[in-house]
Length: 349
Image (cartoon, rainbow, N blue to C red):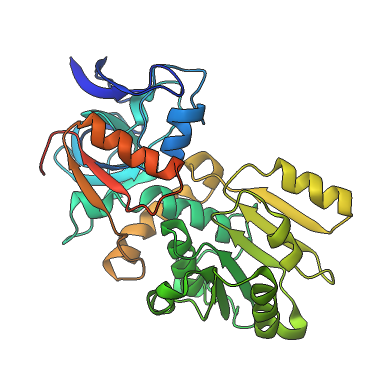
């Protein structure tokens, strides 16, 4: 059996419509008929620069996946054929079987869940990558290492803790804010557009600093918020140059800067300046998230159903409209304002 897929056949070149052999699920996996897949910035970086899969072409992009289970491998007892599910694909897989921009894809049962009642395939497909990335940033030992709030008893007193989220208006930043609120963090500061202040405070931000202000004004506002305690935790969701974020960290205590783009230059800068700052590149994959993956996916549907995590904005593309799909990826490359797209491989769902 074969199915249609959009293929990256050559890095930096337009994608093509092709066909692939439909895979069979192995233990702990199931095959889904993909109903929706959301495309994100890392998909553009994959198409244009080979991020994750440049040495394994042809490949398929799309890591946010929702669909209907077609067949099950062994050790998937909590799922059954016909279940509506969403899950996290794997762009680092040896094959494109775990990617969403195709008619059928595999998902790991451990990194998937049933879609909560009342939520659509499209809505479910907005969550996986951005939520998992921010969960890794806040709760993984390589991130800030806050106790993960899987249960009320897991929560600790963080009311005196401050964190700064740079790029709070991005989808991954918004989930960082919501998860920080879920963890009970006292001061959730974000640098974002002032136009988004109302929404970001509704999601949990306690302070919004306008990203259009000068660096001096931004630093002054943050200092007035944290006062003598200083700032030792920054989650930067958008920057490529980390000189300014590093300068916002206190020099009195060890600091942590979590980043979503290559961190080598930041690490080099910190070392040259002799700063006590840990720079960590956060990756939104199940492998990075271990050993938290299973518990996260057990809790995630409940957090969504209870409104603790909000559905991100999106627009839809019906079928494999290559021109429109390419244009949506180009928007990330060109730095344009972007509403992420959800693609329906089979047409309207």
